[in-house]
Image (cartoon, helix red, strand yellow):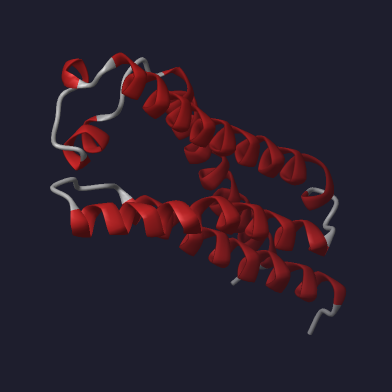
Length: 150
């Protein structure tokens, strides 16, 4: 595969994660009630929850949203500066940030899907981590090729 294609695909893989994390961060941070799969997990409607529970659940959801947003912003900064410069460590940092954000959430969502009536979207985290891994392999392969041409 041609070197410039590799780095463009790596950029896509990493950018896909940044955009996805940012969008979920916005949804989680600015929602005024739990998402449908959250409500399915606790087998109730939003209006049936006591006000104190609503405050607690929304606080937890907004905290997760902040994590999504901060991960997205960190990835964007890494892509914009060190990744663009070809600094190899930035691909590893992007992978680490993404996995730290995706993996615990994926385990929680899988557990929720297994133990409750909810269908939590754990597959999105798996997709995100797979793309992060692919982005790492592609970017390192590209940089190795331009530093050590055949």
